[in-house]
Image (cartoon, rainbow, N blue to C red):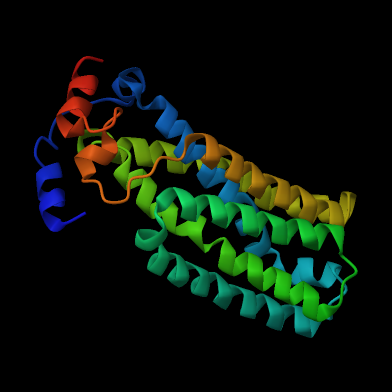
Length: 236
């Protein structure tokens, strides 16, 4: 994708298309995909990030080490995003997001299955999750901006983002309740299951947009380009 593609995509950006037209025009599935993968990514991540020290303490890591470990994990989140940025064009969008969900989900499942593991193992698994989930974080910026025509991109991305934040807020609220009610092991297993659900969604719906122009990526049919996407919306 080049700057010429961005300039070309701006043509017709002033057209008025409502979210209702967007859904009727065939982009509802893409809104659902972005909303669901975004939700499956950020619900466990927000929970781990917000309650990192509490979760590490529940895994029998001392309070001081728990806070240090939480800080290290925060740095690992940044490392994971940087690695994903370097890989997104090399691997492609679809393989990156699927692998990110799968391996990050397995790391959380391991934490849930072996909550009594040694401090080193627990910290390594948390750090692995933080790095591996970076692919899904980067794709939150890439996919939404590639899958919708310029005319409706702002509305579509805003809608998907708002819906995903409902899940993130619920997850953050429920983490301390889950820790107190079902314990750290089942809580981590649940977080891993949500993450792996993101992988299933991406296997079913994630498109590959690497090497395509914005018009081609936003089109509902292969090789139909931006004109086809615009005709679809105009007919809605």
